Image (tube, rainbow, N blue to C red; front, side, top):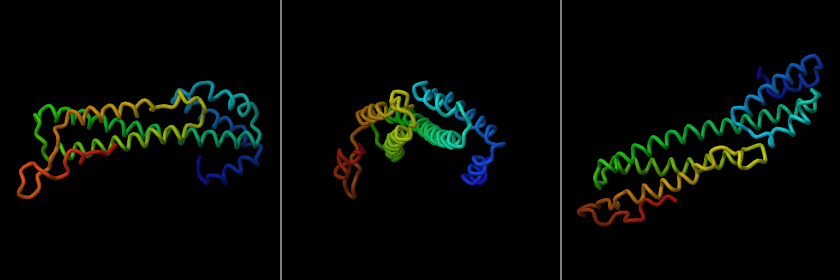
Length: 186
C-alpha cells in the first residue's frame, strides 16, 4: 500500500525479505504506465538496463522515484486531456451558435466567447505543464504538444467568424464600449 509514504519505503529498503516483492510491484507499475503513455524505448532502456536488473536498496529508491515522476506526468496528461475535451465541446457549441445567431452578438455569445478564450489559455498552460513534467528526453514523444498549435488556429478562426463586438453604453446604440480590441486574450 501507499500508507506512510517515505517511512514505509524506508522500512522496505532496509528489510531484505520485502524488497524483491516491492521491487517487482514497482517494475510492473512503471511498465504499465509506460505502456499507457506509449513511451518510446529510448526513454525506458536506461531504467530497464540499470535499475530493473537488481533489487538493491539503491535501485529500489531509483525505481520509486521513476514511478513517481511518470505518475505525475500521467496525471497531468489526464487532466489536460479532460480540459481539451471540454474546450472542444465548447468550440463546437460556439461554432453552432455563430452559425445560428446570424451576426447578432447576444449575452449568450459573449459568455461563450469569454469561456472559450479562458479555456484556450488554460489548454496552452496545461500542455506546457505536460511538457515540463515529461521525465524522458525524447521530446517528440511528449503527448498533447500539437494541441497548442490547434488552439492558436481555432482562436484565429473564431475571432474571424465573430461579428465585431461593440457593447452598447448608456444612451448609445452599439457605439463605444470596448471597441474592436476588447476581446483580445492572446
